[in-house]
Image (tube, rainbow, N blue to C red; front, side, top):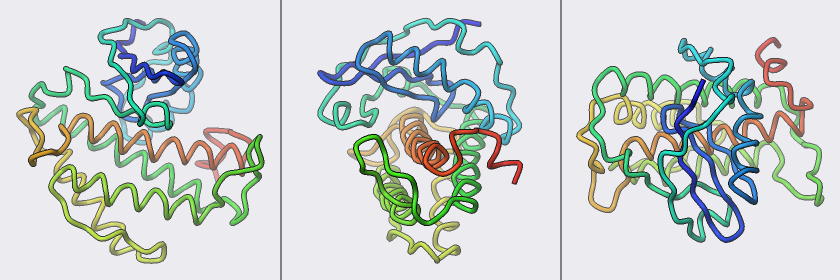
Length: 226
């Protein structure tokens, strides 16, 4: 299985991202390290695809074809994939849009499952830092409210306990992501839908997997079985 990926190369970090699989995007210090990290996360991303009802090849990490190399930025080095690929501007039909929305929704499902079983206080990282559970979720919600504006949506950041507001924000994002697109950003200075979906899913999964590692020992299926 040869999976198309693009590389986004900053001065400190490189991201390897699979455009066809929103959220499957990992980083390393070099191109090779980023690709190795991407391959290592095949079992974890498979859970996301399975929840979405989409077949994810077990050997998706067996080989990669570099489709594009993007220059990185401060965002890249800070630790987020900030590059918009040329393929992000291509039109997206209804079938692809619905598939993309299903994968983004599945990323939220995984995060919610992890949060439901994680302790309030998480094990600290190797340098003694890292947000605890509620602070991490609050951070994700704040980012999503900001990301939504790149799609022309105006929602206040939901409070942690406001399930109605959280659902409304997610539904609004999915309504845009799940609709056919001509590839152009929905609003001026906004993001193409493909990139927005990838960035949102990556951010959700990055923190869901971090929380798993710090609360459940990193087992991708243990959380779902509880």
